Amino acid sequence: MRNPVRVAVVGLGYWGPNLVRNLAELDAAELVAICDLDRDRLAAVGRRYPAVRTTTDFEDIVADTEIEAVLVATPVSTHTELGLAAIESGKHVFIEKPLASSTAEGLKLAEAARKASVLIMPGHTFLYSPPVRTIHKLLVAGELGDVLSISSSRVNLGLHQTDVSVVWDLAPHDFSILQFWLGETPTHVSAIARACIVPSLPDVAFINLEYESGAIAHVELSWLAPSKLRRTTIVGSKKMVVYDDTSNEPVRVFDSGVMPREPSTFGEYRLTYRAGDILSPAIDAVEPLSLQLRDFCTSIREGTTPRSSIAVGLEVVRLMEAVDRSLASNGGRVAVGRLPIGADDALKGHSVGVGSPAAAPAPGVGERAASRRQKSPRVAAES
Image (cartoon, rainbow, N blue to C red):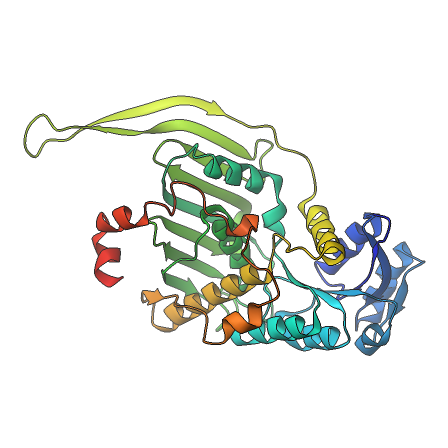
């Protein structure tokens, strides 16, 4: 890019150094400064990039007119305060997932960015993952047929966070991926969780999601597992897919399923099970974070909507709030609901959801929602 975006990174904990590394290698960006309260951490990262300015004072970043965009990789409780300060200084903002600690705070960020005519982008990196995008293409092409169910496991031993639960730490990945694939937000959520190590801070959670199209999903999250597992299974009416982010073959398409036949007598149903070929598509070996940061810079320069839009960030936060409500009601089934009144005004000018790949539903998922609801008494009775 001839005119790279001049950026600064705030927060050099677990994820910040990854942002710094990718920005330093990206031709679409010029890394100007890095900021962290921890002087030792700041010095360690600064030694690798001696041409980049370092500071422990966020006000230095805000006041620097040379900096066009700020990337925030700090605890979620600080996202709104730091994001608003950067926006009010006229800078574009990238905020690591989750966007904010509540929908209200997320809308406040969206409204401020709209008024300042700057871009705000949440960091949902998996929307740029080549395997995730490959599966999205399969769904859009109708290769899997109707999506019947999805089950996902995102578990590991650690890392325990001090400020958020396992839901707020890990669920944004799965929630953003599911929205990208299905093109819809769940109507209802139910969840159970347990705080096994730190009291009142859940480190294991099981979440059930129900969609208007009839699809259902189950998400398992844990900081207490013997090994790392990043595996999702999609069951379609035509084919099935297994996505394993830790495998050398991250996407495997199974030409398998069940073929019902017309009953020969009343009350008799005969089923035929099909087990066909297994296809492993070629996947580009590209770091998703690099693609995401390029999208951020390109969107700034061209005035386009990034795949990881503010709308995606808000929907993810809404879902996590619904999960918290379910947990507060001992695992009760709760309605996700809609964005509050006034949300549309806050989102105006962001061009969110229109023509965005993240907003495009896959054929066979939403187009026959009405007929699918008739086959699902539980959804039909409460819709």
